Image 1 (tube, rainbow, N blue to C red):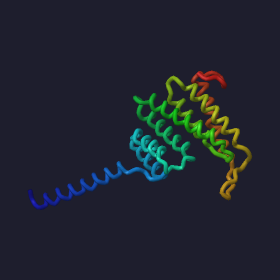
Image 2 (image 1 turned 90 degrees about the horizontal axis):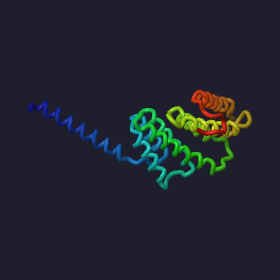
Image 3 (image 1 turned 120 degrees about the horizontal axis):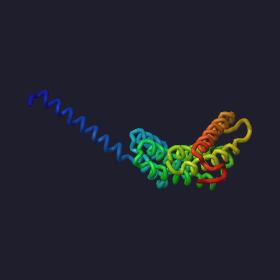
Image 4 (image 1 turned 90 degrees about the vertical axis):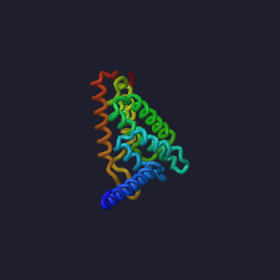
Length: 203
């Protein structure tokens, strides 16, 4: 082996070792706050590593350092990952849909227990989640669309007035109301096309 070849091999080995060390540390690093959790789950989801992304959020939910008032958002994050998993991994679609449903239920339970008085859009996010599950489901479309309609209707009823004042700012509510109604109309149309029973009945 020539001197140049030995140098090239040494550089390759050092580089490979450095990358391997970085990879191990990156994989084993536990997020230390909610921001790191979300960043890591986004990264993993983009890589198609949905189960690992879900595991990261579930680990943080059991961490005593977390802000428990954000647990609903964390369950929403798991539901979003599960929906992405259902889209991209058809062979595990049923499992992913069920897991998403469970986490949306947990998010809704937490929201109902809080009796929030300030304007929040939790119900809109939960309704959107159930709408997507209806789009994905082969046998429970009507059930999910009905859930979505109930949650979007409920969210719409909470949007009162023309503006929302918070943190010294004044925010128009018309765009929010418009977005909710857009999804509500879409769910009703999808429900009708799927041949679902009229409102108030579940399949």
